[in-house]
Length: 611
Image 1: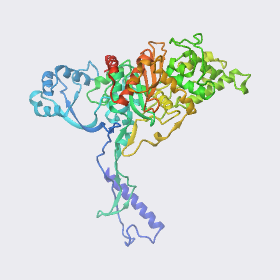
Image 2 (image 1 turned 90 degrees about the vertical axis):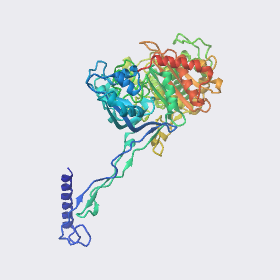
Image 3 (image 1 turned 180 degrees about the vertical axis):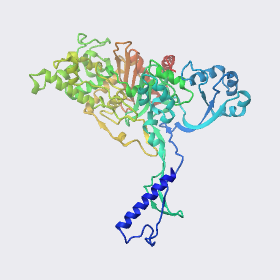
Image 4 (image 1 turned 180 degrees about the horizontal axis):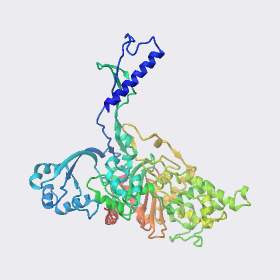
């Protein structure tokens, strides 16, 4: 190939020199001072500046290394029996149960026959034992070392992702399942999203050389060698691991971010699984279980699963109503059960603060009714047109929260969620004369509204900031620089800051005595939490639990969204997880008062743990 390339370069050079001689007969043919009649032949070369590229590391926000390229020791077992598993266990320092489990995890399906290649990952000390004693203890073992991406933590699988060249076995398994393509496109994490920056690129020189090896210019533009860059993540590794223990094998998500910067502090998609599972050579059996499991552990829930948010969406409706004059902070409404049921037994909500504190459904039914049914002077005789115009206006203001569109987070795929339009209802109701009564579920965050976990957390951050946000992101620094430029652009909603400030007293009251989440207060450790619970009706099983909030309420440093499927009330299932994460982040530990509470939640999560 090189000979053919050189011939091509020589031919091209000869052609260029001939053209130059024809157009400029007075110029020399390449070397100053040399006679034109002398034929000069050059050789085109391509010189690699660096043969080996360093792939950047992934570090958490405190510079702890989470993923790096390091030697990985692999032990290949003989393809044909017999294999003395007891001797293998003694060699490696494993008990018989561990040996059987590790081999089972490496097989792509339980009934795999002998002859399937099995490789087991070993630690450095285990590899040394094999080098010393394998030939005598267990013959026909092969130990190899290769440089691969090594995960130093089990937490953060959907954040860290995988290098596609090392995930080929997973891709092959995924193609054999109905959901394989879905998983492959959405699980790459920052390893896939920032692959070009992590990998870097080689540098090449393109000299033209004469017969003596002297250079005479270049035949192509040289490229500069660029080493792969480290990525400094926004994730707090300890907080991430703690949050994963709270959700474990339950279905749902938890997203915690710093509202001041949009940096994601913890990102949990549950059921959780170890970060190395999708690339590890000895995890084929585990991957098969993940691909087929009915709870869909490989679904990236915070980014890709959009659900009705439930009562937490009352915050958005209240903010829009305040902005458009359909509500005042002192507005009172009756808890009229004939409009919509209200599961809480509470006093009459005499203000917005009370309506939020008790999460009164009839209160917010009437708030939204004021928004949709108010008739502008220009449409005084046409209520159909008024409803269409008001719904479109409501949607425009709600979309300014980053809803019904992707937030642009740095992950391979992100769902936009959904807010209904007047045209949507015209088609769904098969008439343009639909009434508020047929769409009232919007008032309590049900029906056609769908939000992702990222959007829920960002919604809490917007309220914490009184109306603005930075797009949520996972990387705070690339090499020695900062994040991607778009993550430093501040976005503003269409709601005035005063109207967001009017929501905060009600959110604080939610966490105080008589509020829907008073049991989750952190007042005993001096932290005032602002929050909102949600219980999402589910026609196919138990209701889903939701919660959004931030702390401290006056100077927020963390905003959290929690959604647990089929867990019941948001106050009893989602709110406790959120406040424990807040306390862990703000204080570094959990107060003794909540230790029993914490252990109960972790036990429940561990019972459902998969794999």
